[in-house]
Length: 193
Image (cartoon, rainbow, N blue to C red; front, side, top):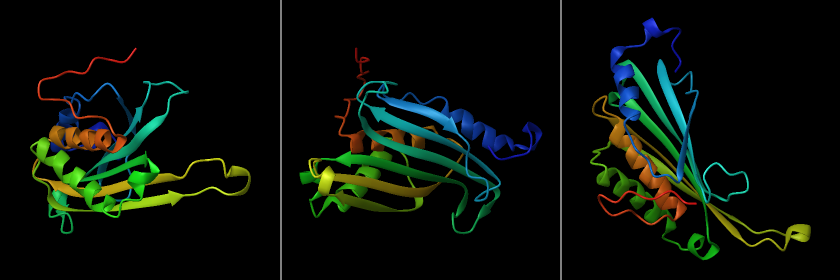
């Protein structure tokens, strides 16, 4: 958070942050709190996430990573059309043939909308970009396989301070980009051994 002290933090922002703590994410998702950006809004908070083949293992492969930022301006901001703005980033490495699909950007953006819809979130003033980077190695690195990196950046305005469903939607988007199969309703995943 960016305020000077606890007495300066609006109660609405505190309630919004508390609503994030109620969200249960899949065991493959490792969340960490990080400082929020200081200049975009009077109050901010941020989380990072990694999805790895083995939880908190240095030797594990990264399947996806990202950042979830909560911005709050009690006065509201005209561009946001509200007081709470959520800014997200999702990065994932994809198989080369998936990355070569000309419809990848449209499909990835549909993942964003599907994740919000499945969490019951009605995004207001939503926008974003989907970027793909194709990497081919040469010379001493030519034995590396081609890689495609996907990046989904999105932001939207929340209608109220109940931000838990927004975090759940972002977590779902991360899992989708990582290639994890969706969990049926009511199923709780067992941790990997």
